[in-house]
Amino acid sequence: MIGEWFEKLSLYLRFAPVQHALIVGVLIALCAALLGVTLVLKRFSYIGDGLSHVAFGAMSIAAVLNLTHQMWLILPITILSAILLLRTGQNAKIKGDAAIAMISVGALAFGYLLMNIYNTSSNLTGDVCSTLFGSTSILTLRDSDVWLCVILSIIVVIIFILFYNKIFAVTFDEDFAKATGTRANAYNLLIAVVIAVIIVMAMNFVGSLLISALVIFPALSAMRLFRSFKSVTIFSAVLSVICALVGMLISILAGTPVGSTIVAVDAAAFVICFLTGAVKGGIRA
Amino acid sequence: MALLTVQNLSLGYDNRTIVADLNFVVNQGDYLCIVGENGSGKSTLMKTLLHLQAPVGGTILTGDGLKKNEIGYLPQQTMVQKDFPASVREIVLSGCQARRGLRPFYSREDKELVEENLKRLHIEDLAKRCYRELSGGQQQRVLLARALCATRKVLLLDEPVSGLDPKVTAEMYEMITQLNREGITIIMITHDIAAAAAYASHILHIGSTVFYGTKKEYLASDLGKFFLKITEGGDAQ
Ligand SMILES: Nc1ncnc2c1ncn2[C@@H]1O[C@H](COP(=O)(O)OP(=O)(O)OP(=O)(O)O)[C@@H](O)[C@H]1O
Ligand SMILES: [Mg+2]
Image 1 (cartoon, each protein chain N blue to C red):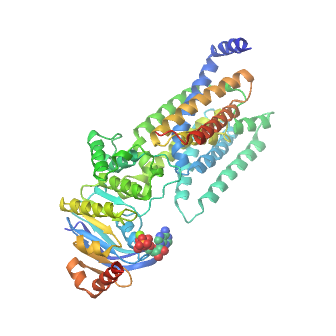
Image 2: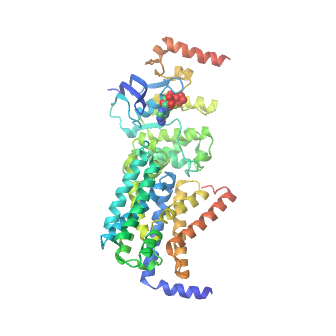
């Protein structure tokens, strides 16, 4: 049984598309987890959720317009929405949650409507399903997508490392940061833009409904076990990458949809971390 | 020119004025105590001075080339999420952030400054602990250490001794006075009028009546006499 799996796996791993999928998956998982910690702590996770729906709407517009390079439409729209959502979230007078719910559900409905009216493909339900829940197979990535994803992830990781200390300062105590002269609003904006980029990257892969899970689960798992920002960030990144790899391998072997498999593995990891944390009372780190 | 010149300042939320027409000046090396009852607008004044909040009216002028990243601030309360993972050292180090500008990492001097301030507040053995798991007084000291890392010029303290035990309170006042002697300007909110009378150079009293002047003038005024008497009466019981 094991030998059979191993044979199948090594056969698959020789394929370039499989290698590409693994690389892309690992990079997306890494980026999502890095920013996930801040997102959860800043209570920005709702922005992540809203944005993924906006990205879905943008994608259906791109599909209807029959664009070859859909990214060039989806990316700016999502980034713009990220900035708008951040603004409304900060403005206490407008109910931030309600505005975001409106935008995100609106975008979802609008996207589905557009696809329904204009889509020429015979397999509409399949198309919608794969945009929402990710492709059933991870081998459909195009070379240009892979490259774009690799470049964007490297940029995201570099930005995160360079701005790590600032992100911590702004996340822990925005008022203090502002009072002492850190440009908190600029960094909030940077965080929102980076989140938008990650969501667009991840959408092709796990689908727009499952992105939030990729962002939130590793951070929550790490927070069960660790007590300092640095250790939480590092652990969630490592955990996320491992879960993504395991999820993708299972998906290849068992033929399950890749997005939901990864999320299922993430959820299982969370349960393990939660139980370990409850037993140990947290590792002091 | 003075470090801070406040002219006809009115404070409040959503255009609802809490305090109107404040006028005072803070010079380099001053030790200004802000006193007044609960809810009189002391914290609001401090937030307005820090530009965390827009004034309802009036102006705040900064002088002497005071830059924003030369200010240290100890908030009255810090809203930290319940399970925020952050070690004491990470938090104190974040006090050095603003001075870094766009440079990404902390320097050796920053780290030494952190160790120095941890020692100064007797929390060096807490350095690796999680902030959320500390007692209120320990948390207060961590935030003060962070404020000390942020400034070499001006320190704004919103009730720095609340929650501290008497020994640490006395040490804290001693330390603030020491910092003031070293040339750091202090603006401190306190309910401890006796301490204000002992250490401050100037006093700003806000509430139904507003007073600003030197400590001597305050102690000679009816307002000052009245409040000092209540607190002394309270102590005598
Ligand atoms: N975010 C807010 N929105 C609206 N009103 C507020 C807000 N924060 C405080 N207030 C009101 O402003 C007034 C002044 O509050 P402030 O916190 O400045 O008082 P304080 O003098 O610092 O009191 P304390 O001694 O209790 O710290 C109070 O009446 C309070 O109800
Ligand atoms: Mg107050």
